Image 1: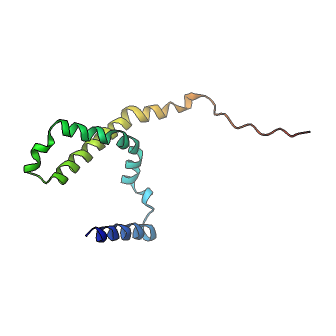
Image 2 (image 1 turned 135 degrees about the vertical axis):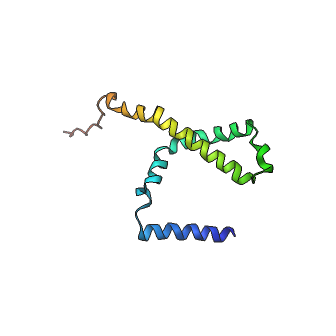
Image 3 (image 1 turned 30 degrees about the horizontal axis):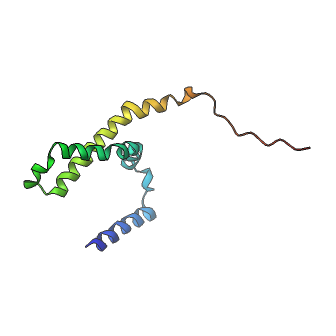
Length: 111
């Protein structure tokens, strides 16, 4: 089954590359790219909090893969999006105040 899933993913990637828009031009993927650093920062924290809040008690009613994946993805995306709007975007707007960029020195002619 795993090989069929890998083949299906490879087919989708190739089909999109050959026929459709470039993958990074799709708006949802651009949004994920914008908050990707927050996803990297917060995903383990969200998983730890879910474990601390005893999410496992709901495993009798919902399959564990679905339960943990749903809550972890939703929590991580929520926290990463909030971080983008509250921290990252305002910090990026300050880059014009950092002063002029230094250019590398050109070598002096010898002689």
